Amino acid sequence: MIYDVIIIGAGPAGLAAGLYASRARLNTLIIEKEKAGGQIVSTDEVANYPGSVENATGPSLIARMEEQAKEFGTETILDTIKEVNLDEKIKVLKGEKGEYQAKTVIIATGANPRLIGCPGEKELTGRGVSYCATCDAAFFEDLEVYVIGGGDTAVEEGMYLTKFARKVTIVHRRDELRAAKSIQEKAFANDKMAFMWDSVVEEIKGDGIVESMVVKNVKTGELTEIVAHEDDGTFGIFPFIGFVPATDLFEGKINMENGYIVTDADMKTNIDGVFAAGDCRVKSLRQVVTATADGAIAAVQAEKYIDFLEGTEYGK
Ligand code: NAP
Image 1 (cartoon, helix red, strand yellow):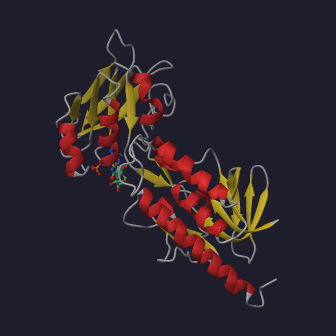
Image 2: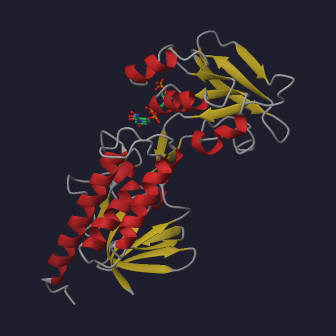
Image 3: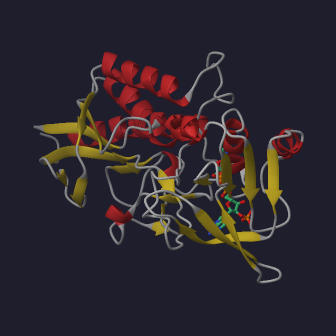
């Protein structure tokens, strides 16, 4: 079967694209590699998505978006796309489970957490190192937690973690936070929050579980080993140091800047019939509200492109 639109990624951008495309009666498939949601499912509180209900969480918002797209006929499948051929009139996507064909493709692959890249990080992920406070905070009930990073995510997630942890220390590489002032003010007023300035993580150690962490002061070069309290045996490490776009699949095939896909205001890439939406593209504000807007625009433009195709010699 040749779909009108295949959307890669089921975060807010992909789900909004699915909603708009299937509402326009285009045969629409969303391919997602794990589960719907993207980064927003790791967020406990979504306070800045206009119209979201009070106490909306990332998972509740995504569940409703998915339901809405499906109500209009969007199909979804779990598969990991390994190879793409986008240059022909019919685009071909090769996944682990099968091959998919479409007249248009909307890339909504988002971005993944940036890793610290220090020894021990990978080995101890899920064993004290976590990239999702909403998912894992409860494991750190009454323990100490270190949050790495100084942006909005680090500070907001750090504050969320204080609901569970005994103490949350923000480890930041500079001596001032990048987070918005309003977020900073709340953090500085929170008794359970502490700050370790000018510091980067050099190594995470532990035998099957985090037991200690080596931190370097970037101004003095001094190394400090933070060791788990004897009674606790472990502590939590939550790196929130930004994101990297999930665009490896399109390297050398689509115009990009620093790994982000370049589009125009209509979400068009440099390849006919291929659009990009959400955090994977070059843009100034990466939020749910801008991701969903991108998805809607991409779907409408995909519809226009198909109309154009079918009115020309390429039409069936
Ligand atoms: P971010 O703004 O890029 O901040 C990343 C933080 O990690 C910065 O403090 C940075 O330090 C630090 N960092 C980067 N690489 C590092 C490394 N290798 N080692 C140690 N530290 C490193 O990322 P974010 O906080 O995830 O936010 C991403 C976007 O989402 C932003 O536009 C943000 O405003 C938005 N956001 C908004 C909200 C909200 O509106 N409520 C909530 C979450 C996120 P430096 O400061 O020294 O560069």
